[in-house]
Length: 535
Ligand code: PHE
Image (cartoon, rainbow, N blue to C red; front, side):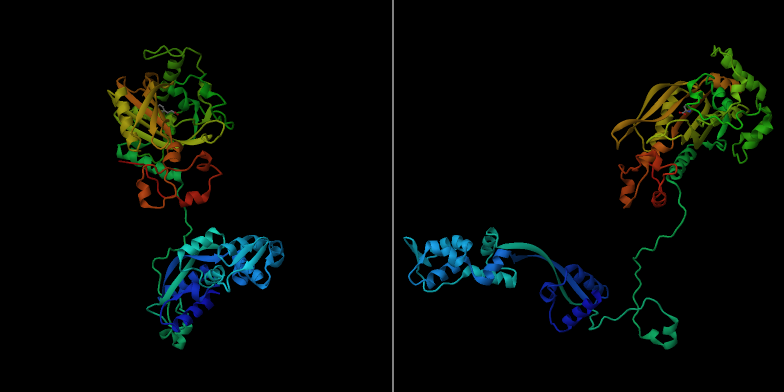
């Protein structure tokens, strides 16, 4: 037991003048036990010690036999010497054993101890020294041999093996005492009452020890990434859009965005439809409509309500532009269904909100920057990189005289703030933007281009029915929050240096580890704040 050991060590030290080598004084005790006992003594400065790694020689089973009974050559000599008339070679195995006979005969001859006379062996030396046996006995007692050449020779003959041993050399420390005094950890009422408080030894505080982790709530990694994105938007002068409406009408999710009513995205396969109730009421006037925006800080909500475009007019403009064409557009020319506009859906993109906010902006047109980060829903089959609900980061900029070059330039600044410096734009198609561009970013860690977002300039067919001025242009873009989280999130940091390490990436390979019922709460709890690699 460790406690016994500490007492034995202290005892040994009190009787010795110099340091003690554990392998000499306590050869049979395992080194792990020795170390833990020494550590206990060391923490109280009662001993000091150092570990010594060394190699020891030990005998093989065969060598142990030699050390105990003599070498084969010595045995052969003895047998030959006792046969006064000489020993027949054929009788040697019977006298000393087969093994000893075959090895020992040659060696005894070579050493000049015996001679061969036809089929007879005769003794030549009067007496011999069995050096092999003596060498092995020395090794057995000292675990080493003074002449390294002899040792390596014995190793080659497989009589000796080397083995690593840790030995501890310990001596008295500054607070050495013969006894291991129990140190108190707490001052008790009894000690105060009896007065022993003044004589007992207290264990010193360990100010370096880590406290026990306390149970507490934790922010989900996605929330932390969302926070970073919000900071970027605020830095760039954006206002946050109210996203508290998961259920939208077909009108705000699709029609107002000039998405034709036959568009495949409006299919059951891509969109979740609400079954109860399946339809919204017919549109009402403005005061009702603004009720779901309780905490808006967006300035136009209070100042210019009066000049908001009449909702009926907007409703009709949208129908017109789809069905017959308007504002210089030939439209889609299909019979537009107002009933379809009222269908309730789980919003498939936050662009439904951007659209709503742009229509509000039309009441008082002026340059504006809006963003939102919230949940959207798509009826997709779930796999490692797709979820039926995810978060969209969305931004819109409205201003006069905006150009596509300006959108590209803005994207470069925006994504640089997330640490993505190389961008490529690929022409794409959205019913509500023209031109449209998919945005690709070069992922240094994966060493390839990955799609990071979708963008474009909103079409006049979307903006003009709202009443926005003809010369006002609006950019928009959207990306998922999950993707940058999966690649950027800093996982299990072990040093502050890692935070700044550009290649530090989040290990989430499956999106379901990030969102949904499979998320491991430990993972949420143990993750530090996110760092987007900002300049
Ligand atoms: N709504 C688009 C999407 O879901 C993103 C987008 C927003 C594209 C605004 C262009 C303009 O991918």
